Image 1 (cartoon, helix red, strand yellow):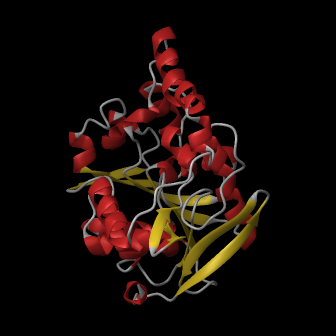
Image 2: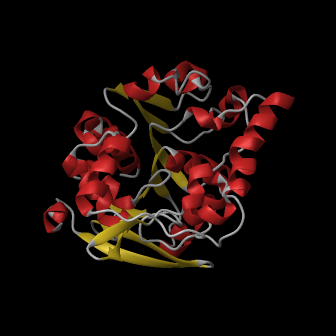
Length: 309
């Protein structure tokens, strides 16, 4: 796996203390440079940003952590169902650990949502936001009796029906490295090299030369707030933070943005601070083909630096 670290920016491991345990992550670049925090999505790892970082400007200090229960970070206490809001304090912990007054935020999928809600809860810290395929369809819920019933059964009823399994009551499956790699490639549409970046942090030895995935199993029934597409539009488009979104054509083709079409249309953002680029590829295209978006992201990041000169 050493070849994966042959990058333009020096990579270092970090540990941040949290009330429930430890957050573990990676940094790239010089600490005194303007900070950029990168936040991965559900059941992922911070090492998935390596391919993209090879193309981004060297003048920033990049920080990424494994969210709780992902990669090498400790999971949140067992018991209750996990909600997206449970992960927002992770962003706050990282900001406080580095004592950042201002920073740029880059989020993929769930990570993009966490950035949105951190920005609402703690305004004034994020100067720019990059969102990588940010709005999965399962976020939206029709706000009538049937819609709320379905939301409850999918996210809470099913969770408590599998309570023991999802809270460590059953030994997780074990795989050979090659089998685990094959499963990850198939599940996420990644080529081998891209998948290996993620594998670097999501596997743990399980004895006899086998491995297990480290994800907190509760994330399989992970839930978001039961809001409609219109409600998300009202919340998201109200931001005054300059925002650049990269949407995967595969996600659009799958209908993932049918209820949140405002993400595809800058005209829906009244503050005139939103831009978007659609690229060929699936939900993890930033890992498999970062070159399709890297130049646009770089130019967007550098605007923040130029504004301070």
